[in-house]
Length: 633
Figure 1 (cartoon, rainbow, N blue to C red):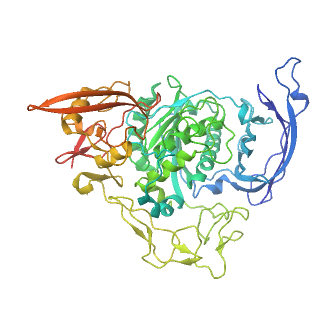
Figure 2: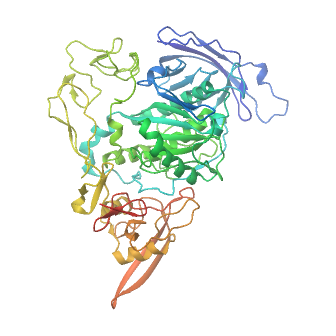
Figure 3: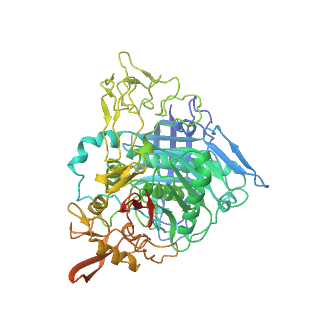
C-alpha cells in the first residue's frame, strides 16, 4: 500500500503556525489504495506585517509513504469501551470495532523517518523526515473540518512541565552510560531485550476530560491518536503498546481528583486494583485528567511498577490541545513503570535517530518541547530492568483479547496467518512471505521468536529464556512454535536470596542487591542500629517515605528496617542522584562506639520520594517489606 504525501510547508522562525489549504479525505478502508494527500500552504497566508522579526521560507517536498498500517489492525483484538449513563449505570461495549482512520509508516527516501497520522476527526499527527524537517499536524480549536495547522516541532511551544515520581517510588534501576551492564547479563541479552514485549494498556478519562468533548466518539478519536503515538514511541525499544480498553467517566469522577497528583495517583491505583483490574485484565492503566495539577507537575507514576496489580499505573494532566503533549506525558509515566529513570543532565543521554524535539521522552522537564524518542540511557535502563526480572507480563501473547479478522501486515500473528513481518518495505524476515503472511517454501517457522533458527524450529526442550534471578524460572521451546512460552516465575512469598528476602511479582528483593543497585558492587546494608536510628527520625536522611503532602514519615521501630534504604561501603558516589548532604554520628552500644553515616540523596526537585526498600525485602523473622511497612509471611 502507498500513501503519497504532497507537501508545500511554510517554515516559520517563530510565532504561530500557519493554516494550510483544505485536504482531500483519506478513504477509511485500509484494503484499497489510498489517494494522494495534498498539504499546501497558502503563500498569501504566510505574509507578515512589515517589521516582523522573522521572514518565512517555503519549500516544496514530494515524498511517498513507503508503508502504512491502519490503527484498527495495529491492535490485536478489539478494545473494550466503557462509559456511564446519567443514573450511573456502566455501559460496556466489548469487541468494539475501531474506525479505520489512523496510520503508521515512513517516508520513502528518508532513512529513519516515520509518520503517525489520524484522520478520525480532521488530520492530526506527526511526520518526521529528518531532525531539521519534522512537523506536527493539528486541527484548529473547535474546527474539525477545516485545514490542519502545520508546525515545525522546533516551533511548537507547549506549557513547560515536569514529572514527579510517586511518593511510593521504589528502587531505581537505571545504569548510567559510564556503568555498563555486568557480564552476567550478556548471555541473556537477546532473549529479553530483542524479544518483542507488549504492554496491554487501558486509558481512563476522568469527568473533566470527558466533558471537553461533545460526545464519546470524539473522545475515542483523541484516545486512538494518543495510543498510536505511544505505540510509535515504544517500538524502537522492542515494546508494543496495545490499547485494550478506554473508560470514560462521563457522569462523575469515580475517585477524588485532587490538584495534588500524589493524592490522585493513590486514589486511582486503589480504584484500579479494586474495580478495573477484575473486569478488564491489563498491564498498565493511565488516567488522563482535565484538572490542573498544582505547580509544574503534569504526571506521576511509580517506578518499576509494571505488572504489579497494586501500582502499575499513572496519572496525567491533559495540559495541551496538542495530542503530542499528552502522548509524550503518558509515554514518560509508562516509562517510569517500565523502570526508566529521568535522563541525566548534559549530553550524556543523547536521543538516538530522528530527534526533532530538543529533549528525550524521559527528560525530567520538557522546557516547552515534548520528547519523541527514548535516550540511550532509557534503552540501557530498560535492558537492566528486564534482565533483573522485571516485566514478566510483557511476554504474554495477548490471549484475553477478542479476536477480529486477521490483517496481513500489522506485525501481529492472527488466526489464519503463519507469520506477519509487516509490509514488503518493513519485512526483514527471510522465512515469511509479507504479501500472504504465510511461511516461505521449506520454512518451518518465522524468525520473529527465539525458538526459530534459520527458518527451522528448535527442538523441544531448548532453553529459550534463561532465569533472570532467584524468583524466575527458565522457559523452553515447545517444538512446534517459534515463540518462547510466557514468562513464569515463583509465586509471591516464596523465599529467595538464601532466605534473606521473598519473591514479589517475579523479583527477589534482597537488601544487599538493592544497596548494590544504588552504590555499586561491594555495597552492603548498614548496621542495624544505624539503620533503625536514621529511619525512626523521619527526615531527609531516613524515614518510611513521604505522605502525599510531602512530609517525611517516621518509621516505627518495628518498621525501620523496611523503610528508607540504608547502605554502607561501595562507591563514593551513588549510581542515582547526587549527595546533597552527609551526616556522621557516633552511637554508644553497651559501651562500644558505633560510627554511623547517613546520606541525603538529591534525586531532583520533581522526585518526591526517597528510596525505600522493595516490597518483599526481609525485615525481620517472618516479616517482609510492604512499602514503608511490614507484612507477615
